[in-house]
Length: 204
Image 1 (tube, helix red, strand yellow):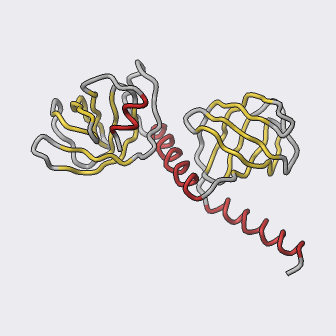
Image 2: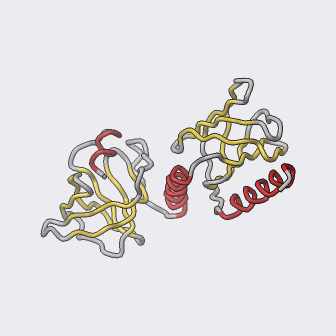
Image 3: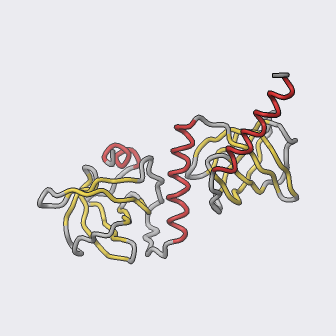
């Protein structure tokens, strides 16, 4: 296959890959660095595991590589594929494992926005590495559910089964108490205020 045809096929494949991913409207703050190492603030308009649209004070050139740091997401790398009046869009370069993690984070962020959850703003929100948690009840029964909100003091969990308010339970190895019910599930408060490190270790 001629070299130009190979590049064209690779480009078509990458465009097809980007279309496979569902875009999520998320508004997150961040910073990006262009190839000349200049840094600027930015804000996301929408994202998928394969692409992101950013509002920014300047745009690089199409094809330019960029490194972006986004709140709750972390570092992503990619190249500019489109520019518009208020910013630009990038194709994200990441292996499949990192794309899977990004998909889980975006799903979690989208669910938090769509569900009308009562929120406790005393502590910063945390994006879990794995949004699926194992719950252990006092009688040692266990079930799995999805974390839809998480902070240092508690969590909101999507579940058809809702333990009674006031019930003790464990999320992973974290001790907690059920404090309220809502349509999609229930919320718990941890017995001890956590740190980001302790949550990451004990929710595994």
